[in-house]
Length: 242
Image (cartoon, rainbow, N blue to C red):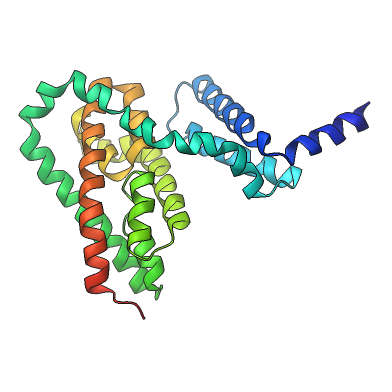
């Protein structure tokens, strides 16, 4: 019987149906672990779920293409999930409107610094134009970042990885960094999370302060718009193909 179960498991792991339930179960397990540790920021469910899925794919010998075939539905829901961040924004619209000039200035500055620092780092390390174009939109939400990378002759898959890792990093350490600089206003945390960490960090903000999620949602939209405009123009102007 164990042999039969073992064979059935590996047969299932090789089918496209494998990806969807494994992804959901990995995330649920990671979320439960975070709750058990009293919401510890470093135990980010997305990060833990990614590690679990990688381990499962390695242990079962499942190609990533096979896994992604089953998880494609979740990938398609990424855009609507980002749009859903407009719900707390709508609930706090008047509060956000009063601070719109400051929010706009801070988000524009953050978008420019993020894109410019990514390109500069790659160029200083001797990286290619394609890598620089992939790095520039890293702070935008993943669907926008991938589109911007493609338009700028970058590598969308690399950009997606950078955007996800950046979001996880901000979700893990963003609150701690703001405490170091004595920024205690949750609105500032929401704005920083949306500008630097996109949807993953915004989800972390929403768990702790729903009002701050309104600022995060607005920052995600503004940052995505600004990034989509400045990065392709800058890459074509500053880094012509070699």
